[in-house]
Image 1 (cartoon, rainbow, N blue to C red):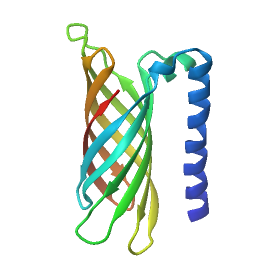
Image 2: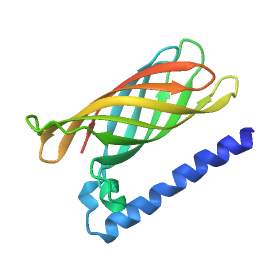
Image 3: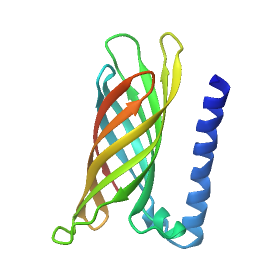
Length: 162
């Protein structure tokens, strides 16, 4: 079972270079966004990490408003340390009167590894958040995510994409 979980994460992460290559072939390198983030997870404490966002993936598959992102956070719980990697798809909910605000909902996969004790787990995410255009090439985001591993955990994340 554990090997199947690891394989599922590896397959999901293997799709990321394909998205990069497709966007580069389209001459749309600016569409890929990267930035720092800070998270808090119940039972996991504060975490710091980064996110890579692919806002044009919806154009590649013909679904307007679809975006994907991969993120990595290193958390500092009260005992030991923990890191997590996420691969999520989001769907923007447009608000015509507020073009700089882009609320979204989404779902995806989460892989958690505890550095003390050696445990790991593959889980599922359900999330909601919003992106705010700050300048023509900068977006801030805030997100609430429920990660379903052995039990449900709430994560609150905020960051900047450029």
